[in-house]
Amino acid sequence: MPNKGARVNERVYYPIVSKHFERQGFRTFIEHPAYGAYSTRVDVMAVSGDGEIVSTEVKMRFRRRHIGQILRLLRFSDFVYLALPRDYYGRMRRTNRRIIERLGVGIILMNGKGVLVERAPRRSPLLSDRHKRYVLQRAKHYL
Image (cartoon, rainbow, N blue to C red; front, side, top):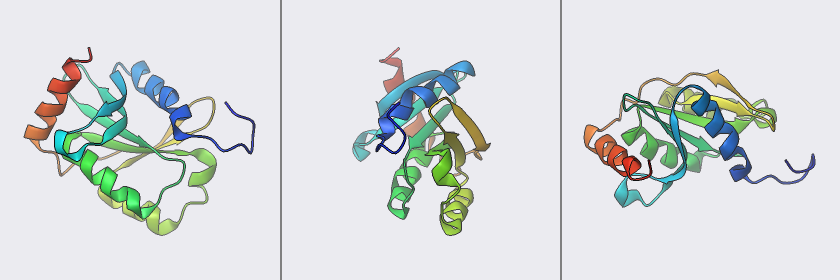
């Protein structure tokens, strides 16, 4: 972990978030390719034994432009989390918190030692079985 005050890349937190899901029995993938045409990657994707997909987008700051990424994740994931640094979440705008809450996205707070689930997500209303099957088939290639 870099010195306090140094700028931290979000990739530093990928293994920390991944370990959180592995402790719960999920198989995790870091920077896993998402559904085909979107040419995007999921920061941390966790797949349970019964095929539930939990996607986590790790951000150092949340901006409204990130909503598009979250909406893409909601199309093929059962549950979606947004992982943010613990100290940033306390300063985050109330309107941005409401947007995240309305989308049903869970919040994971991170620090250098571990994570804390601040709010659990709701099951995605945008989930497409076709997209989910495609992602699970691609995940099998990585097992």
